[in-house]
Amino acid sequence: MKRLLTAFMAACLFLTAGCGAGTAPAPSEAAPSAAASSMGETASSGAVDAASQPAGAEDTLPDVGTTIEIDDSQAPAASWQTQTFTSGPFTFEIPAGWKEYGEMGSYTAMFFTDASADIASQPSNVVVEIMPTEPQEGVDYADPAVQDSFFEYIEADYLPPRSPENVAYSVWNGAASTTYVVSFDRTADDGRTAHQTAYFLMGLRFPVIVYATDFGEGMTPSVDDIARRVAATFRIDESFTLPQA
Image (cartoon, rainbow, N blue to C red; front, side, top):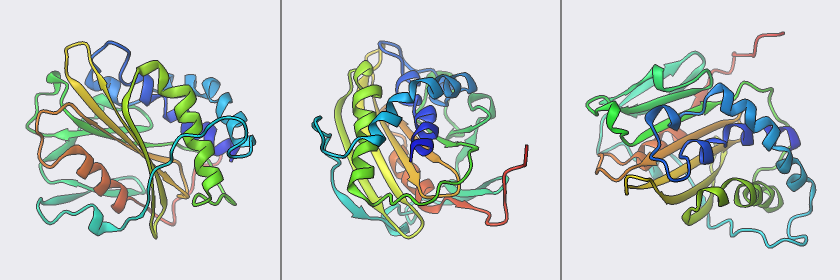
């Protein structure tokens, strides 16, 4: 569990660095950089402490929200055409009119937005982050104590510097994975409100996070719907293994 939180929190630096205080996030900032991920390795020491504490000890834990069942029908594609995106051993669905912008991503992150959008305008987007760490075993992600430790660390160490509003937590229990969801609103310096949601796909062979950043320009389908579709359809080739050092 300690190693799991370290990997996820390194990637989770997006929640703060990806949308700097008082700064409208540039498209390139929406995807965590290699530097941001390495910085998170140090910052993640708090996650280790949080994971080692019994849930409900002295601190008041955040409301984890509603636990729901998720399947593909909860991320519907019936109203918009999809395409299957493949990157190495990873596959998932995105809208037919969307594309990856490689220059906006990093060695662990893929940045997607509408192909017709002006990338310089900081459009709404979805980022898929895959951390190249060894599989985690023996963790029950449906355990409320595990969920509380995870969300407690998000609440205490990553959200406060960004002055978020309307913070919400939820958990999806599905056949493929348990997904922890964190969403919040914040204001950029140009006055736009960014609604950000992070979907942490737990129990897969690698830590996977799907980020949706919505600047409210009315993109259709919404980036949250797209991110949910990515999460519901994300697959890893069973024959793939990490290269040995």
